[in-house]
Length: 115
Length: 107
Image (cartoon, rainbow over all chains, first blue to last red; front, side, top):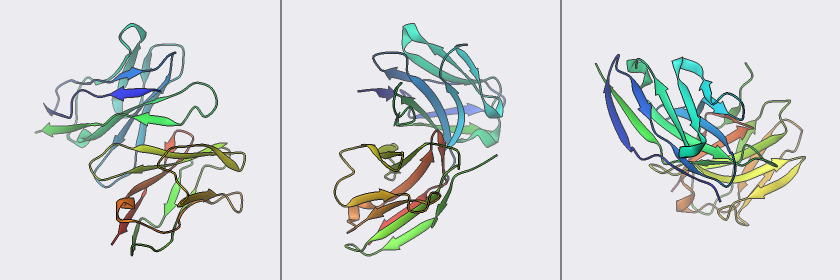
């Protein structure tokens, strides 16, 4: 069974600083990988996804993520954080074949942005 | 851009009552899902639905739960007899796109 680990429960950065949120997954083959963002009381917005091909994936809101097979990681990055990026971020993995979008989520990383 | 909608946004019910949560998925998608998120916990898969039938379900999705797509557009989750522990945010997903959720509160 697949699993996702987000080692950082809470991260605080200053506005304008760079950001990297860590995600490690466990899966027997190359999975489908996703990052979602959730603002308080809101739904899950898809930031980006990796299915195949280029291991550096560009998403919305200036985010990118890099799939590293050797490290079983899919870390999310942003070069310059804005105050509006404060939210909770979830990494998720989907199994290939069949229902590709049956997702297993990590516990999330809460991002606080200081002015 | 098409989006997933869910109604109601918030549902309050008494323990033992039946609730139906509704979703309108994206029309040309094939796979639909229900997930739940108990407050402060991670998002958990409940059930997937393909070709008008359940394709996979989790151990959470017991006999109290059912799903259907009665008219080819709406996708519903029914909880027959709600328990306190069913209080959670319920998300419908149309492939990788999630709806805004329904917050279910069981008193």
